Every structure is written in C-alpha cells, then in structure tokens.
Image 1: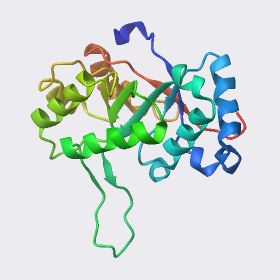
Image 2: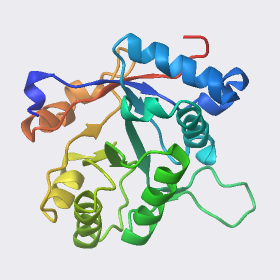
Image 3: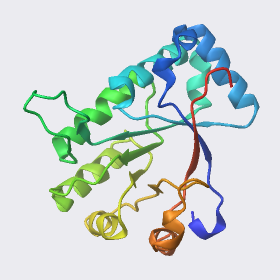
Length: 213
C-alpha cells in the first residue's frame, strides 16, 4: 500500500486499557469493542509492554466472551522493549531485544493472550542497536510464512535502521509507527516522514485508549 495515498487505517491505542477497571469485565469490554466496530474502527494497537501483558490479556478475554468479534477486529501488537524503567538498585538496565528468540516468544505469547489465530501486524517496538538484521529478518519472514503474523513492521525506527532490516528480508516491511501529532511535529521537518513515504511505509495514525469513549 503506497504511503503517498494515505489510505491507512486509524488505530485505537490500547496502552491504558489495563488502567481502566470498568473495562476489566470481559463482557463490558466486548460491548465497547462492538461499538467501535459499528463506528467503522477495526484496528486495535497493543504491545506486550502495555501493563506487562495485561492489556492483551484483557482484550483476549473480551474476544473469548464474544467469539465472533475475533473475525471482525484487526490486531496490531509490538515487542522488543525487554526491560522498561527498571527499579533503582536492581542492577538491570533499560534495553531493547529484537533477537529471533525474543521476538518468536513474544509473538507466541501475544497470540495466546489476545486469543487470535494471527496477528494482522507485528511491529518491532524500538530499535535494537545490537540487532543481527539477517537473523531478525529471517525470523519475521518465517513468522509471516507460518501464518502467525500477516505483516511485519517497525515502530520508532530511523530510516537507516528499517532499511538495514528490510535488506535482510524477503517480505516487505509494511509500516513504521512514528510519533507525529500537532504537539510533536519533528518528523515533518527532520526528514523522517519524507523517508517513510519514499520507502512506501504506511504513516500510521492512532488514538490512545480513553475510558468511556
């Protein structure tokens, strides 16, 4: 899908889902999902780091409460943030991991938590500076060919980083999920948005979870 056409889905971000107690009831969340589908909103954006998997688990419970919903939703999820904001004195550091073992495990875990047969899109959440592009690219290709993910992409990557990964893959990276808003216009002026469009990536736009909406 050429990015220049801007024919891309509007994603609903599920980052705060686990912080909304009212939506911890599977049937109530299923009703909310149903209402969004009726509005024409079909894409739901997750990550394994959101609530340490709680967001995906809650969403999956809602799909199990109403199994027919699983055929109507499109699910995006992300992984690679191996340790975010470690506790002071723990001896651990914040780091990212895009190794095949980590990503394969993350894909399987997300499939189970979300109760879907396939992730429509799977994104590498943050760039892993120590990534073996050939090994990671092969893992993503294999996941696509195994039917576990519909497409692979990246999130918050520089053009040089996604091009290095793309060069090691048979399948095309489909998207780069970047931070772009009225409050954060930097990508429009530093060349990153232009690079995204030039490489045919979909400039995804999204809206974070808001309780009661």
